Amino acid sequence: MGIDHFALFVVAGLVLNLTPGPDVLYIVTNALRSGARAGMVAALGITAGCFVHILAAAIGVSALMAASATAFTLLKWAGAAYLVFVGLRMLLARAPTPGASDAINSVAARADGTGEKALKRIFFQGFWTNALNPKVALFFLAFVPQFIAPGVEHKALAFLLLGLLFNFNALWVNIGWAWAAARMAGRLTSARHAMHWLERAAGLMFIGFGLKLAFSDHPAN
Image (cartoon, rainbow, N blue to C red; front, side):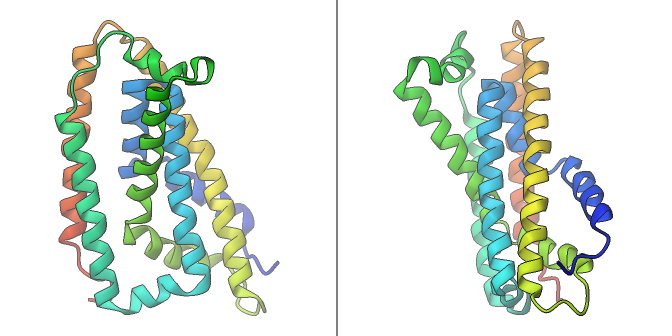
């Protein structure tokens, strides 16, 4: 399939996905606040957003963005604004009342309309958090081609396959983050006030990520 050092690609991808960043922070925050189900839905949203970058890079859109300072700047500001928006929502969120986590985690059993709405919001917020971040697109352009054989005929297909594999492996790592955070929250059920402050801290970090992205330079500069 024109892929070099396949095992190294898998290991490097797993290590990169284990490194905390905005995506991991979003997953962990939702799992801590609302349980494993919410964290896993957040992971699915992040994964769906990543598909946008994989497809864009495979067809050359990301390469165009890497070459165009204007395209990069537009997406950069959109992504930064959305990260700040998510951070403000976390920062200003009300403290959860007893039973709030149960309301979300029992969606499948009770078909609770409010719970369904909350899970959809978590999914799409995760999707846009990833899809509007140009750094993710540029990461794929820098990382994946290193593992494509120089003489392969269908480079776009090889890129697409590697990108999908990276995203598939990332999904399970992110689900692991959600499960671990939910287990931690289960041991802190009597400390809801502390959990609320953790969410506020996460909100501040999201605002910081957004500001960092807003003031980042184009890679060509």
